[in-house]
Image (cartoon, rainbow, N blue to C red; front, side, top):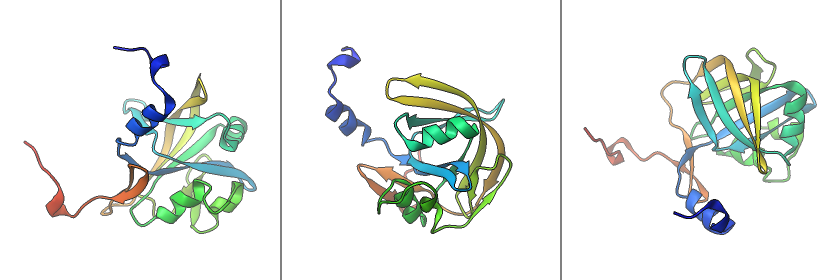
Length: 174
């Protein structure tokens, strides 16, 4: 076993491309003081006190706004929402409130924007932020939830957006 310092960044990034992940857009801020980012680093933390974990690069403009507002919304994207993922990833040069332009938004409890027709929405208060190297691990207490039933998620794997295969392609194990 080797320690992390002997692993080069390119090898690590290549390895992480083999993890398929649900694509989420994390929204932060309000009005013109809002932005957001695309993330695959969302995970449930606890069901006893409903909470999630999200990783965010501290150099991101989203971190500054999140520090001011102390809330965020996890919008898990459905397979037909790739254009939203691209916008919040900054593709096409969009920044800040411009990223919200091509979608419909509403608010649940905290004031952070919730995407209409997202696969699921988790409206969160920032409970804790843990700094670790270049990133901050956000722990959000879930305050409100919205779910869109009977649809499939947008996935990210091997450097591209993917969809689940047809039901016949799924592998079931006992």
